[in-house]
Image (cartoon, rainbow, N blue to C red; front, side, top):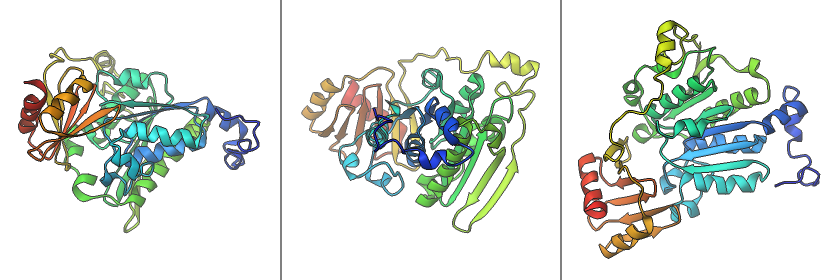
Length: 357
């Protein structure tokens, strides 16, 4: 931990505390705050860096993916060594961030955020920051935030365009009321389908980080109560006032229907957790297969090697290059990313052939 009396660190936040709206009291509040950042890709990596450099006391990082060369164009915390080592993004980010500010408590979790773990991940934090790339996870984050009365700092980028809003329980509507069902955003452009401009990422991340610092430093009244859209290429800005919660929404509403519905928020369904499921990752020629049980990586490493696979191994995952051309990335929590196909059935069949049969 850094010693505040050390002359090297004594003025770490001096330029921030000289900003009158923050001052020493605001800096103290930042140090006593905690945030959850879900998705440590382009937005999330930038957000994490801003939170750590600003002196937020606890920063929780959660991401399901690993660093690849295609990330390096826009994901500012990662480098070629991270990609060569196939490090999980949360781990690679935490390694860098601890060197940036050793006084911040940084927790890294390699996991797919879902209904079974989101409550524990968000427990006790003061803000949830959105670094995700899909509507389903964003809606889940909004749900838990409105259930636990935690502000949700939303952001999204594709191409040179971005959006940002801070959704506050008991003040604004939830994300479901703003964008509708999951399909409504899934049909929109993503960075995997239309590309992404790195400065657009940084622009939106700066908006998110600025709103987060306002809230955490005790300047909640300064938080912007609008939905902001930007096109950085042609530089057009559009701002619209956020609506209040919907009376009948079970997430942001206050009516009788909302009160009855709140009891059902985030209830885990009764389906068999051991069942195999799959998700096609948009634009990446990749399928995530969830096997429903933990994977013994050390045992599977030997089995895959015996089957002629070329392996890259670290303490967090096993990456296997198959002779048929696909790649499988195995995580101990039971997830397998099958790269080289967008066919979920084929991805599951490969998991059966190499891991289960």
